Length: 130
Image 1: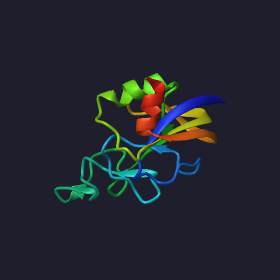
Image 2 (image 1 turned 90 degrees about the vertical axis):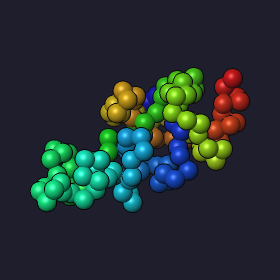
Image 3 (image 1 turned 60 degrees about the vertical axis):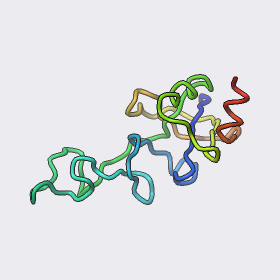
């Protein structure tokens, strides 16, 4: 097992092994978080009256990558989020032990949690890491 750092957005399904899915930035997620709305057909499953041409599209939805997007250190997480806009004051950083199961859309590890070590809100995490 390894230690990972993840920003868990306040609008994501609860942090758990069962909900451990990674999606592209800005995607609309299904209720269980395991799929996102297809960007090619805007979730309709069709383009100009024909089935969607995106090979991963299943009736307007595409599967997420298994595991949570995460980083191997606090500094990596801060750098990764640096160019993506400031997280909200109520967004939570989860430090957890887990196992890497895949690689995310940006080349980051995706991991399934086995034990939460600690949680901090983003401002406290950044202040402590500075």
